Image 1: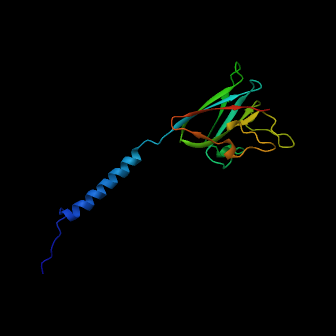
Image 2: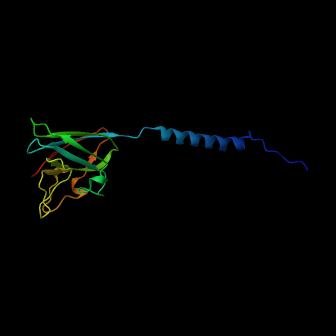
Image 3: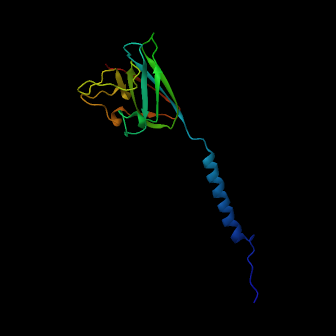
Length: 160
């Protein structure tokens, strides 16, 4: 009995192979596209004195905002400009989307926002959108803003 061998170059085999090859090519091309990244400029004003630095933390979700800076996507300590009593920080490579920022004046270099007996901050602090609810820290939703693909600059005034 003679077996009918299939010609692997027949049109019925070539088309699925061509489609598979095209799908693999497109997948590899998509993986090679650069991830969109944007820059965020944070300008902090109203710093009471030039001691220490301004701690700035950028959050991409409500998880940890505003008290747990270990959950921030980026954070840094910005030097204070004595002439303007302000600090400016630039965060590179953020994915465009929604963020919230928490800042405080770390005048003693402790790296912590100290509070008094009642939990009220004893240092200057602020949040994006200059959110300042009474008797509590703001929520992520109250402080969130949109980081555009071409970058965004925000201003935050410290309250003491």
